[in-house]
Amino acid sequence: MEPVRVVDLGEVAPVRSQAVYHAVAYAMDEGTPDTVLLVTSSQPYVSIGYHQDAAREVDLEFCAAHGLPVVRREVGGGAVYLDRNQVFCQWIFQRQHLPARLEERFSLYVLPLVATYRRLGIDAYHRPVNDIQVAGRKIGGTGAASIGRSEVMVGSLMFDFDHELMARVLRVPSEKMRDKVVQGIRDYITTMRRELGDVPDRQQVLAVYLEETARALGRPLQPGQLTEREWEAAAELEERFSSEEWLHQKGGLRASGAVKIHADVHVAEATYKAPGGLVRATARIREGRIDDVSLSGDFTVLPAWAIGAIEQALRGLPLREDVLRQRVADVYRALAVEAPGLAPEDLTQALVALRGTVEGTP
Amino acid sequence: MGVYRACEIPETLYYDVERDVWVRLEADGTVTLGMTDPAQAQAGRIVNLTFKPVGRVLRRGQSAAIIESAKWVGPFPTPLTGEVVAVNEGFRRDPLLANKDPYGAGWLVRLRPTHLQEELRELLTGQEAFEAYARKIEERNVHCIRCAE
Image 1 (spheres, each protein chain N blue to C red):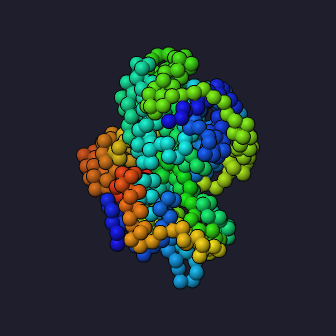
Image 2 (tube, chains in turn cyan, blue):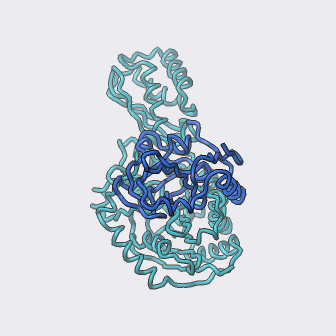
Image 3 (cartoon, each protein chain N blue to C red):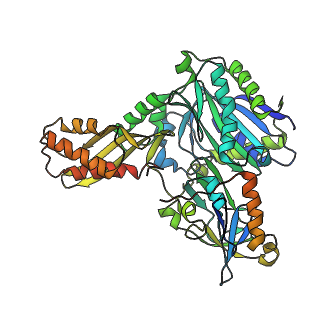
């Protein structure tokens, strides 16, 4: 089979780091070689998923005040803060040259990323469908899109990641939720710096990645350049991606309401109007179970520490109405909780409402 | 109804097997389009969808919607040229409609076709469609699965 073209663009402006792989995809014709693009953004920015509502998902005022561009991509998923500490590894292939099944496409795409981490001494593995993890922590996400006549796979090598800024650029309903997102990222996202204690050299890591990519594909790689036509397409896309119209394009049918940390971990918030006041449940959900939850609102509960006890007692429970109701009622009884207008059923309903915010939670 | 590896391929519909789209001819001269069972199974749980607006004229092959599943984004291409006369607003309440009922409640768009006679010849129906799909399902090693809720 024909060699795969490798184009290492080094560091480019934020909008170009997104536009360039779309450009290769849109410009693809029968003669375009399958391409692996390596690129890093020279400046920090926020990338949002194809269907996201920018104003609802991202704190646009914060981003504007800090000079962070916000760029919508034509790949799905959520908002992510990116900077010089990730190298994007983008595959733009002729459709028939990648497996037709999505699961197999991800397995192939993830293989050299995992192999690269392992050669660096990081015990990474593929967590299907499309996460890469190290001891339960995600080290970079991946995505797929069909654009023009090509299949596109995107992902990154995670040298380092800024937890605080990631959580800061998101628009979340409360600071409590933001704290949980920061904590969630800290607990469930990892990087090369964290695993190795230092950031390895970019060129060395990329050399390993390309070796492993050639091995995974069973095809030779050939360093190349983008064509004039591809650069023209990139320039057009950069203009579109920089426009207000594209940024504020109305999202899809609905927003999820939860922040996904990795395949099994979400942070979500839900509210429920109880007779005694509004109840807000902010929770980290892991594999459909409560990993950590805070209950707050304008209600009165005695003894004052009972809410803390209830929060503790809920950890590890599945988001199932009967189970939650039982546990809340047990704590109410055991502690002789007095809470006017806040029955166990009200807390139960606030918790059950979390389910609706997390995609895929039964 | 033809069923191959749990994938339903109703013989009464027309298919663009390559694009994974089914077509139903309506009595009023419009056509209804949707994702086939193998298409919804391969895309996985749909989380979001954007339709081309009603009134837009689409050429054969252009995308009538952009579909986002949990892991993938891609177009929903129309196999027929025509004007969009309706889109399925039901997805607003339930993005999983096509995952649950691809040939019924999960239809995507309705078009008023302008080149129906010539373009319909490119589509397959009946036993011929079933056999072509069975080959594709076999090649791609697809097993269909529907979302229950």
